[in-house]
Structure formats: structure tokens, C-alpha cells
Image (cartoon, rainbow, N blue to C red):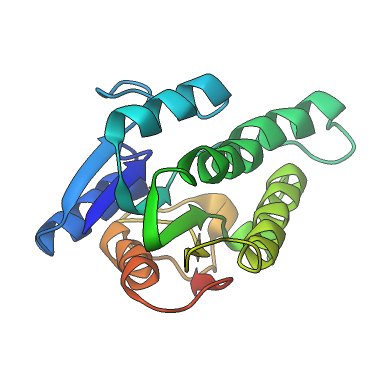
Length: 198
């Protein structure tokens, strides 16, 4: 399988790259600093990435940011930043990738636990993640040529000894465990699903 991982240098993305490589897959890892590079907020950059990468069997997007702000302090700009990066960037990757994805290929996007569970200041992230999950469910009905689409929704990713105060009491996961959900999505038959790792 030939896999394009957008966000391949990040915490989750690098683990996804490793997981597919361990299976013998050919992996193209892209980020702002890689060759090829990509800016997911720029449509031309996404199109250029897919033209450079060529035909792929699976696309993973493991990146995108949404600002943290309490609702009483949030501005339209906070929401716009999340829409442009995490929501719009991943949707843009699907649109740019459609001409390059193989028949019966797959897209796997990244959402997160904050779509369902709250921490302080998570309103923007919750909105963005919920939007991504809605997109995945609906896009699954429209994709041509047997192409599938799913999302992975991880909880906080921690390695042993790490603590993030805002997530105290939440079940955490590891990079390697989350990566297996992307493998499941790419190798499986399901579509329109959100694979929760929490």
C-alpha cells in the first residue's frame, strides 16, 4: 500500500508513519518542513502536494490546530482559525486528494475526544471536531470508486510519566495505540466511521 501521511512529523503523525512502515507499506510523510512540504490552510499547497506525491492508496491527515479560549473570551477569529486549520485543512486535503486516490482507497482524518467531552476552554476545538465528524459521515455517502473515509478520535496522547492537568481523570493513550486506529481505517472495509481511542 502507498500511504500519504499529512502531518507526518507530529506526535501522532510520526507514529502513524512508523506503523505503516512496519507493515512494509510505502509512506510519503508531509509537513510544513518536509520535502514535499504542505500548508493545509493553502489550497494550492495541498494540490501541489498531491501532484508531487502521485497516486496513493490511503491518505491520513494527522494535524490541524484549534485555539483554546473560554466562550466568554472567544472571538470570531478564534473560531475562524480552527475552521481554517483543523476543519478546512483536512476537508481541503480530501478535495485535493480525490483525483489521486486509488479505487477502493481511503481517507482517514483526525478529530478528538473534545467533540464529546469538555475541558476548560475547549469550545472552539469541540466545534471543529464535531464538524469533522459530521463531514466524515456525510462524505462517506458521496465518495466515488469505492473510496472510503473515516476519522480517528484520540483522547490525550501521553507517554509514561506525562501529565496534562486539564485532562486529569481522563483515560490517556499512547502514540502507538492511536496509530493502530489509522491502520484499521486504511486496511479495513468500514466507511463513515469515527474510531474512538478512549
